[in-house]
Length: 73
Image (cartoon, rainbow, N blue to C red; front, side, top):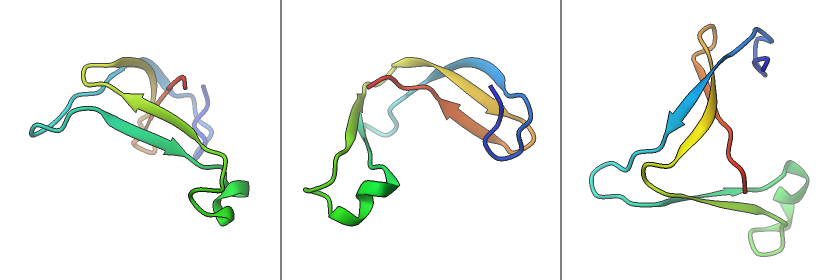
């Protein structure tokens, strides 16, 4: 996979979500730019609940220090 910032090849690996200081699951809410001006309740979003110790494919760019987890909704 190519880095979206510098276009160099990224290193493929595994990412592991860990909870810190008693915080459990997290929720990621994605709103496309085209929907962001419609307000929270009127926009079409994608949600993903991330459980502690959930493992996912990830990519890392050493040049940009950018980490991209790949999450399926």
